[in-house]
Figure 1 (cartoon, rainbow, N blue to C red):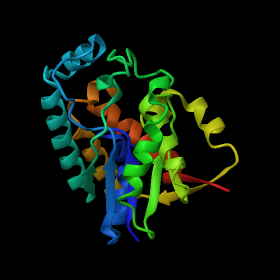
Figure 2: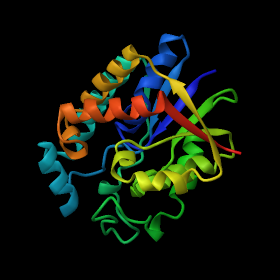
Figure 3: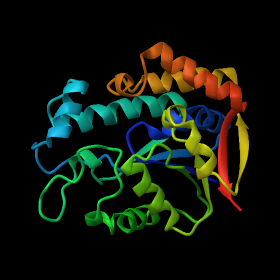
Length: 241
């Protein structure tokens, strides 16, 4: 059975489940991480919001950002033993509406009405690559990131059995959302050993451009990942009943 982790961005899958992915690949289970929103924008024009983010990342070009982040992701996937797969949908900071205006001046917004069809389009693209025996794993959508919400909706449209992982680092930022998001669901903790924990931490640190936006430095990465690992005995996955 192939395990397919659906990752909205170039880091979400490893951030949230890197230790479990390492344990699975070490045991001989084929694992792929499918990153949905990592396509190349059609032009180098950036919204004011995207310009701010590019400044934080230290990379002015949109194309260079995608290339750099894919390279980071490839390194992270290699550390945990997963195969990366990249889709061509755009990150919300690069998306425009039907009238050409930028859709999002923040990532924590409800999906725009112009993107009502986007989940179905993403679902179709995912479905075209899935095999009947694949185990699908998707983020819960903690933190209200518009892209996480849209990708979760897309996966739920597939009508397949799905396991859900908690979005890290949003689990640390808004822990009060976990209860409502998992109400009525069952959960299981998957054991991750010390070696898996270290590989998980190492893989997260491979996303060098994102660390300052997501954590308070490398030591914060290690401590937060270890805390989650310690409290759960590994990594928890949820499913609907």
